[in-house]
Length: 319
Ligand SMILES: [Zn+2]
Image (cartoon, rainbow, N blue to C red; front, side):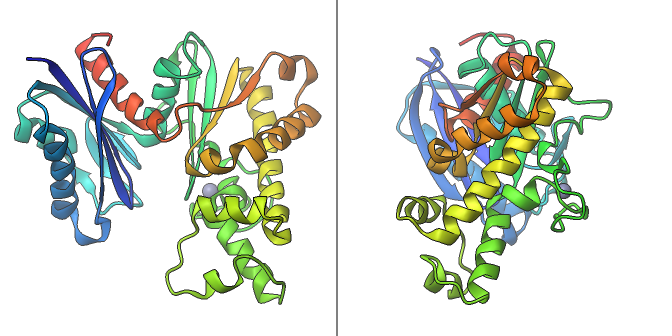
């Protein structure tokens, strides 16, 4: 019987799951809504449904589960998660008890960075940074060959680097954070305000819909279709990402800065050149030249491969 491993990406709207074989290849995938507003027991139940459905069609033996979760994670517990109603929730333990296998949990941005580092473009790098652009902007750092957590595990909040003093207010309470200028949430706000000013856009009708959620695919369609407002806003967002990139280069002198996340997967090709040129303009030249600025080739799979890396680290194996 083949050894099997499960990697999970537990987000505020959906849970992605991948089944890995002993060679570290994805042999099954599934996705279910996280039902985050329905309480901690319901979310856990959704997590179990993802696991059960991955195992259903396979006869191997489950060996371990790895999970990436947004929020502050300490000792396998979700201390706090803004997008899930988990507070001091012992996810690692609960999965271990239910499936009788080792379970490992990490912060989603760090897990995605781990995926990029161990299974993606970052292979072999000693110093790299990752920015994951979606509803928010997650970040992570590898410094001297290890994920850098800082003194209490809170390091790498690249989304909350302040790039415009007195800029728009951010979810964290500060003003002008990168996330308040270049995340999908920020972009939706800017689209709304432009349309309210009477400008016409691809989004004019869409935005009036109740509970409209900005989709990366819509942004791409608008951008490619020449929508003036979308182009303006996305070009600005890319410039701010470039400003942050320059600061990261100057501060850390990394070999590689990787951009991932849903928005980058859809629009990265359009945005990466502008990010590079802004960074080139602002960073210390000698440092800029030694840093590669790339799109993550793993896309959404970065988090799943990162979850696999959590397992590899935990079990001290290499798949
Ligand atoms: Zn912030």
